[in-house]
Image 1 (tube, rainbow, N blue to C red):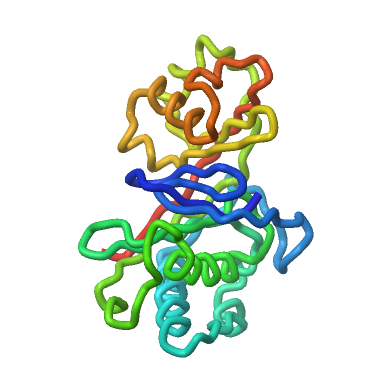
Image 2: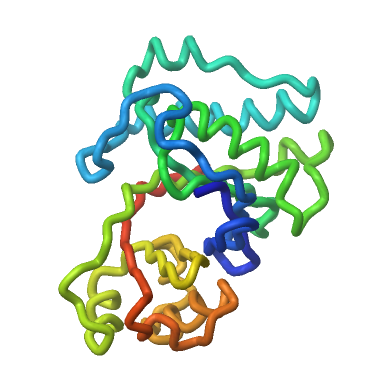
Length: 232
């Protein structure tokens, strides 16, 4: 499961080069790589101070990389906020003048949250292939937002005929896996695609599958939530 991106308002991914209201480039993380302990995200929350610390980390990481080509150390931040050393997956979105400027993230946790935020922020600024790399002259005009993801869970007990209704009620992030391909929309995509059947059809098409692939008996569907916050 690697990092991801796309041209809609916010977020889809396809394994390999992920397209999402943000982008996802593909390395598959190894479950035990990185640092930190894995926690079920539904038991995970962030204080206002921790959210602000992560937003500051995202901004500082991009500015330091663009100006000095250096990565920001995270040891001091972890000492102050130990929870941020937990393995968590996140997406980092950059906007300029209200327009998407870059977005890359991880779908499943494989490193400490502070590392995921730092490295995805730099990747969103420099490696989202839909955009040219961020330049120093743009730094002050960028605004940052983060989505810290729950662990995806297989959706069970919901037949395809009832899937649109179920998803409309709960509006989670959705992953569709079918015949070696995978795509996802983050929960925030419901704001742009409120119709569940259109949501599912677009998600199928993003992985190059027929628009009704979500009805395929071999399709595996998982859902997840997220904690979303950003700069004003």
